[in-house]
Length: 186
Image (tube, rainbow, N blue to C red; front, side, top):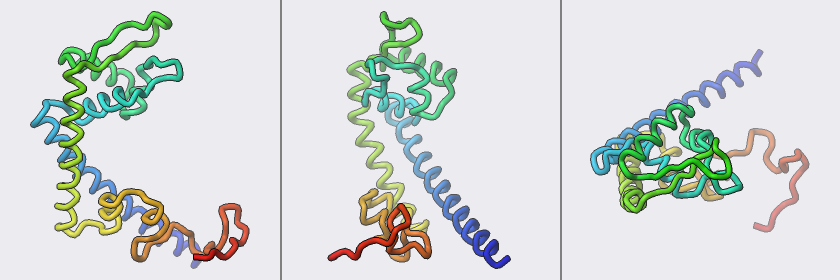
């Protein structure tokens, strides 16, 4: 019975951390959404779609399936289709049916979209930095904020945060396969 109490305690701590992460995410997302709308009249999803398109998220053949874009931005295919229509009506993208496969759509960013992404990327970066600093001042979860500020370097992920380790209790000194690890020189 004691073991299930430990598991429940860990679960409760895990749930609390997840909720803290969700709150942080929501606050930062709302700040970014507001700034993108204020400066460019774009929703966060629209900006994310442009970013995905810029990064060339496409099939191995170089064309885009709507379901690929939908998966990347976390929307249904029908919502993504409406989003693409909005972006096209605002002259941020051009679309055409692909000659090689009538089920796919060729999507191209316009020069206006490329400039929006350049300026918007700077705005998003600045907004995230400001939001994180504001959350630090409010006393939000220290470890999560530190991760956001410092990135996901191996040192941060592998336990450089005070009181944090990604090694489960009782497994220190073991490899992923469960074998005893060799001592290191440093």
